[in-house]
Length: 151
Image (tube, rainbow, N blue to C red; front, top):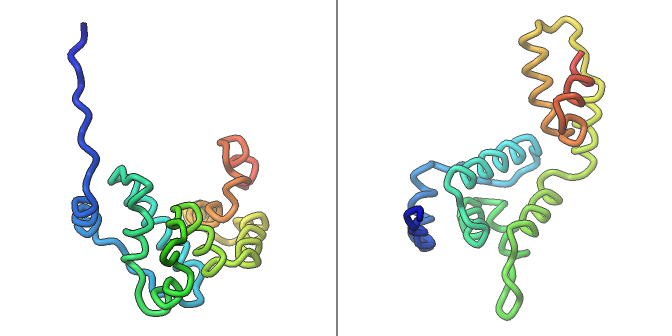
C-alpha cells in the first residue's frame, strides 16, 4: 500500500498576505489607461497562480492593492453589512467594466485582426502579435488558429 500523503493545512489569511507582499504586487491606481489595467490584472493573476492562492483570498488581496481613484471606486461598490461577500469572478467583472470598457476591448481585437508585418522585422511583428493576441484570446485559443492569424 502506498504511503499516505498528508494534506497541507489551508493557509491563514495572514500567511497569504505575507506571501503575497513578498512577491511585490503592483498597485492599481485607477485612471483611464486600459492597457495599464490589463497588464496589472495579468500580473496579479500570475501571482495568484504562482502562490496557488485559494479564491476566497483573492478579493481581499486584490483590493488591498487599490490606491487613489481605484480605492475610492472600491468604496462605492464593495459589499456592506448584510450583503453577500464579493466573489473573485464578480470583482473581475466590475473591474473590467470600469477600467477596460467593451469598446476598447473591441478596438484592440480589431487592431489584432488587422495586424500586418509591413515594415516590421519578424521579431518586432512576433512581439506585437503576441501582445495584441491577448486581446483576442478566442481568435488564438489553439495553435492552428494562432497560425491562421500569423502572417
